[in-house]
Length: 239
Image (cartoon, rainbow, N blue to C red; front, top):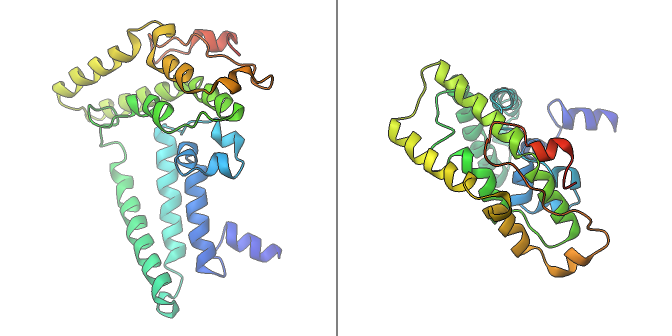
């Protein structure tokens, strides 16, 4: 049993199905927001992950790409000619994906994470307003936990932009203008009037608000300086 577990988790599993599952779960667990998008964090009881945001750091992106490159080496050790058509197709698709990820290691810092189309600067607020559920007290506590991590996420995003800028990777000027306008629309309102506050107050069911188990309320989050630690959160206000 120990050998089976060790091979499944770290080496070449006996079954390619176990390998497929390993790649999926390691990818998913490393991206708590994906677990929520798939409904796994709440449905399968992952409260720790349900209350966390993704790691937006360049270090995580590099480690993740390197790990996937290692998984590609493991996948190539399977004799896919002996698989049934369905599993062979799955192996081919996964091989294609892992090869693209391996090739991308060289270009990890050659993109524009902050942009006017689908930039990271609005991805987290959009996630909190469109994908994170607010049906139970646990959902609400996880939402507040993620809200408290916005400062950390923005710090990581800013650090990534600076790394790219140091390498001369900068988007066109019009992108900056659009992004600044987007951020101003998020930071201009007071915390009480902020879109996130209104979303939380409007989406959370009344029975949850009255539930004794739910003793947290939205804190006054400082959105004025995304790269600065939230003063209210650091002092423990609203907890």
